[in-house]
Image 1: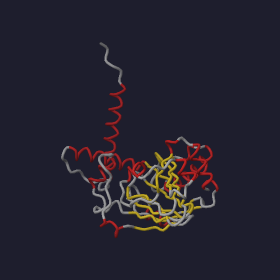
Image 2: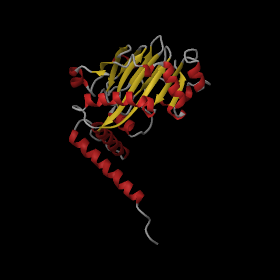
Image 3: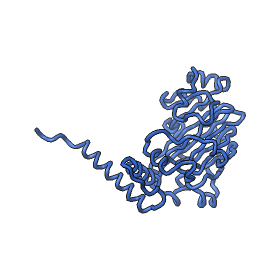
Image 4: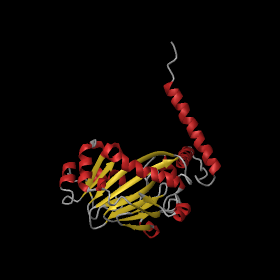
Amino acid sequence: MLECDPGLLAGRYNRQPFPFTHRLAGNTDFALPRLFELCRRMDPRQIQYRIGEIPGDAHFDSTFERYREGLSLADALDRFEERRAYVVIYNPELDPEYQTVIEGVLAEIAAYTEPFDPVMTWYSTYIFLSTRDAVTPYHMDREMNFLFQVRGTKRVQLWDPADQDVMTDQQKDLLLSHVGERPTFKESFEAKAQTFDLQAGMGVHHPFIAPHRVYTGSEVSVTLAVTYRTHGSDIWTDAHKFNAKLRGIGWRPRPVGSNPTLDRWKSATMGLTRRARSVLWSAPPEPT
């Protein structure tokens, strides 16, 4: 289902975005009627929806509350194009009818990335259903992503997470520690974007925490996102969390990525701290 250029994969994986091709475009599991049925039978907590056309610099984490405008899930599904809706299905692989195709895609991603980034430790998938001119505002995720365009077109803009003008070391430490707001978009970033115009059967790889923004074209769009973490990204995440704690006491730590050995030590220290906390919280009370 997935085809990646070996040269692009070896040279750009988890450092720069790169395009790939896939065979999901003709898969009947991703036809709108079947996806609407999936939405209706899934736990409502697994479905988010809003109107599609919103500002590209909107606050990402609150868009589903701020831009619902009285839209109900029934409206979003029954009058999808008329209401200009945007629907996200969280973890469609939880549905038995979708488990095989989603986990099959995940297995192929793991097979491609294993030589460069072994041991997938976590994943989460999403199906985006968008009417024309829908927008996913500027934001960054705390993992990697393979984005599959299944129907319609999308313009995907990605920014280099290593660019200090786009995201500072301190901002990355706080982002991975879930402290404060995500870094926001600035007009000066526009010229730095790498832009990918995706048609059905195309996709783009998002490196770890790469900022991005997405625009749907002039027709209905269906997109699958497969986000995941690996042993390597877990080390980076814990190292960022360690740095955030040092910043909290006024220190200026070495940036994550500048010293892999130090990153592993920071990660191991955070792991020991979690295990110690777990033991303390689970210990039986002292006899009186």
